[in-house]
Image (cartoon, rainbow, N blue to C red):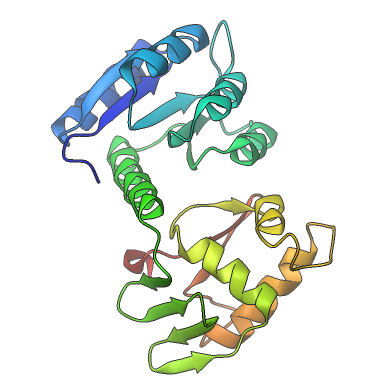
Length: 233
């Protein structure tokens, strides 16, 4: 993670902006703010933030349109803020390339933790490794397609390994089924998202001590799956 990361906070509620700004600055970040969609794009282009906290319900240009524009221009990490009733928008936002989301009302401390986690993941992607390690017990050797959980080697199919590697490269990130299906294009022949559920079930059967209560591959209900960060387990 960069020494002093710059975070752009975009929300049309001044109280939320001030609260988030206070917590982020206390956490050591530099903070930029914007209150509508057009201002968010202008500030993102001039301020070049390391991460954007983006509310979906914005005046002028909503958060989904802002996300589309940002993704056409680059890969700056985005954490969405959504209302409880915006389940569809949450899915669309993730499909457009948002990295994480929080549902309002949210804990400012949790938001700061999410910001740090997404920045760590983004830094890891800039320096990809042929061997993926998550905590002390998980190791995925990508060239050899070998998976180890603790002292145990796990045999996975090519599709299962690629799905697992996709999630393990960014532990904590939520992946929709469509994103996971896209990650194994050319490997899996299924063209429908629910096929991912079957692969996840098989992966859990092989890597989890108790597949009914998984430690590694976690379900995010209504959205998709994520690989647990070491602190989750």
